Length: 534
Image (cartoon, rainbow, N blue to C red; front, side, top):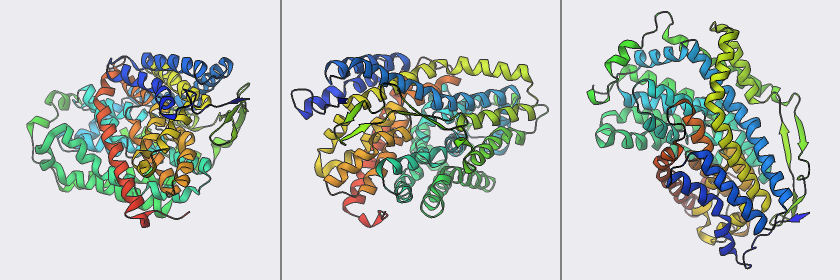
């Protein structure tokens, strides 16, 4: 059995911390500074990680490559299976004219103002898609719609990535919170409640934040009532549902309430017409579909919402569920920090969420008149869109698994936990790093959730608060995750330019993570009564 080393560099935690961070630094530098494609940046980080894991952390080469292979398989199934089927549904909607009809609905039922469209589509509708599928598909789909109404691809992707932070912790019907409870041995209910007492602050702020980036102070003054309604309704529903209803329904209900209330409000109030933000006349004149009602555009998205929710409630995903111990890796590594063998179980669910979305795509194709030939063409189009994203995600998640099993991530966590009283300020960055690597708040919670609790108990901090902060901090890393960006660019002309997108979103990711750290400091030391009891 391989015993993980925590301080392999001269027995020094600071030096070991620096070396353990090198693979992440390589990915960040190549993406953000050199602006290389995400797959190249991830490959370089993986190569550096292998050299360090084998040469410095003394991990046997066989175990190192085994852990990478485990990560790659997990990246393909279930992660990219969900992405592939969600984008397949998108391509079927495009082939059937329903995506054009969706644009028609937007132009017919919303004011002629791109600022309004940005909030309704990227924030309200995008959160609904995050609650159903996640893993970058909301970014790919909503940015495509924004581009269709006149947004430049780079700004469409940037704003949808920032907006995508609000719903992530409760995505896929609350799975990140459920996993967090399982790995920390804390009840999931108070964890969901605590996250629901952190993220609503950001959900309320996001429409104002993005509008300031897009239109500046003048646009804030022009559309602030809509921003208040959109952000306020989402944040209030997110708080109420996560604390008093069921955290699994938080995203779906928050996004639906915000979408319905915001669109209804825009029937009563509209911003003053501003030609600078009007949708171009040639787009408006050429957008009307001759035969389809704009309301028919909602069919694919309503259908997939119903299928996934029913699928989850009836636990169909458990049919055929097989737990496979990874050959040569399962319990072959000893986690020194936790004093326990490291399990390596691949949970193969043939009827998981991705398969539910596939069923929705098949039903949608039948209802919308897309025949077998059109369905096969949509599969081909989806493969061409996602093949680079699949490679990128496989590489970055392979690196994440390598760092987990070699012990490098535990060295990083131990180093951060040594900051004592300031730990609540930097605790969000552990979740940030985990989601940056894996692209998933669920995986981030599985990686660092228990470490956060161990550090909290050692430092006499509230474990519910610190564990929840791992999930909330992870959502801030979502907007710069190579996996999320690679999926987001898959439907645009920006393929291969993930580094440019990363450079645009990185500073906002850091700002929000720091703000969360300050909020956690306040919640821990000034208003601890806000923390629910287990």
